[in-house]
Image 1 (spheres, rainbow, N blue to C red):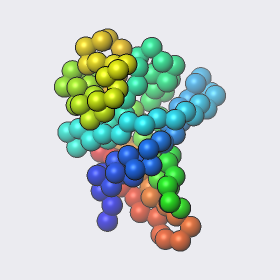
Image 2 (tube, rainbow, N blue to C red; image 1 turned 180 degrees about the vertical axis):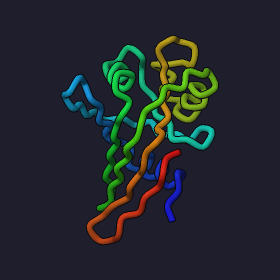
Image 3 (cartoon, one colour; image 1 turned 90 degrees about the vertical axis):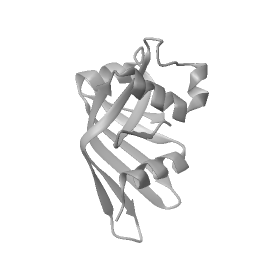
Length: 134
């Protein structure tokens, strides 16, 4: 049985995943690389100045997809901003290379947790497995 840690492990090993948002009716997809567990939830990070931030605030329904070694994961849910300093710091501590562009007190760093969703692991050779996201 897959867990949240398996979800994050897959995303980290894949290195790049693709985040899909809605831009006033137009789908937008872009590469992302941050995936972190904080307080039992899956978190991602971006900058408040980016269009992706505006898109997630306007319509928090998102999907994530990553592919690696003949397997893929699709994650659907709602992106909820966590504006606490400790959440931003935890993400940046997990990805110290981001500190070249962000810090937890810069007014730009933004983290979201994914809720009310599901992560589905799939391949062409095995049954799918899913993990509920709280």
